[in-house]
Amino acid sequence: MPSSVADAVIALAQALVPLRALVAIGLGAAAYWLIPARLRQLALLVISLLVIVLGYQRSLWLVIGVVGVGTLTYLAARRGVSRRITIGGLVALYTVLHALFGLLMFTPWLEWTGVSPYAVLPTIGLTVAFTFLRLVHFAADYTASSQQLAERVTPCLLTFWAWCLFFPTFVHLPLIRYPDWAQQFERPTHGPRFAELRTGMLRVGQGLLKGALVGAGYAVLNPFGVLLNPSQSSAAQFFGAALIAAVSYYIGFSAYVDIGIGAARFYGIVLPENFAPAWVMVRVSRMRDFWRNWNITVTRWLYDYVYLPLGGHRIAPVRNVMLTMIACGLWHSISIYGLLWGAGLGLLLIAEHGWNRLRIYRGVPEIQPWLRRVLLVCALSTINLALTPYGYDPHWGRYLYPLYWLGVGR
Image 1 (spheres, helix red, strand yellow):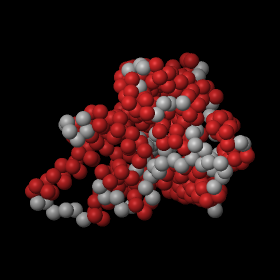
Image 2 (spheres, rainbow, N blue to C red):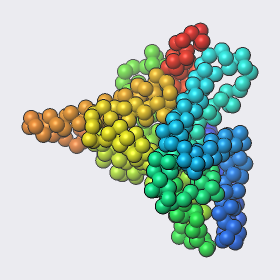
Image 3 (cartoon, rainbow, N blue to C red):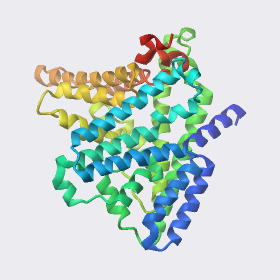
């Protein structure tokens, strides 16, 4: 294996899960099952903290911030603060953090303040993004506007903290709803089930293998080298690079989730699936089916906490689809490229819906499944350019943040 390919494979594997994190996860699992069952709830919380800080080397300030905001959300639910105020506060905080990123990364303010970029990046990192989704779910289901559910399942503070800080979902996905977590966390099994341990090891291995494939692919094909220099590439090369980047994103993203799901099994926790297997994804030929199989837990969150509150299928469904997808884009990044990405996904869903109506009511022949798959992949790859790789590139990214156009970046 050429050194450049080997270096890329090792770098991506380290990005997915550092060796020190694997060691911490393994040692933590051994300690977890040696501890008496009555102490395992507290032990899992402590182990998660150690894996996050020592294994994944996440900032202690990030952990403290998540605990602080999470505790405020918990207290708001227990003290009867209205759902609207609680969720509004979470949305406002998330917006401010993203604005801070755009302000410091793409304007002279970062140089003036002397703040390191590595101190700014966690404010829009995966931990913050997924913590935001979890806390909105908790606020929506356990605040004063939903007393019946709150009375049926009384949130326990220890269970809540462990839910916020469980290391696989702290660093990445999938999202697990609080009731599903509480049911497993509050009833730990008495001993390790070797079938589950074997399943966890195979799942982690699957994720590492996917990461190795993506790393080798990036080193050999170098799609970002083409995408970041469009003037030096032909249209065919540019589109091919966009296609490779989109497919690699799926493989890498699902690899990260595989590792998290597998690691959770070491502790007797079953996390929900977040991606359909590759053999299912390659057969997807419609946008609606794509969203049923892609980033499943986040898709369900968008459906439950954005689409349905807007009116769902009952009131202006076309508008609701577009607003939900725009919300999805802005959740990824509160910037122009996040807005464009979400709007593009919404337009694809609306166009597919319009085509189906035309086909049914006007007798237009159905498109062959293979051609639908090709068109869908091409459309998704094109829209994916709004997020990859320009958003965080210092040269391109500054033009996509509103603060830059206000003049603070000139």
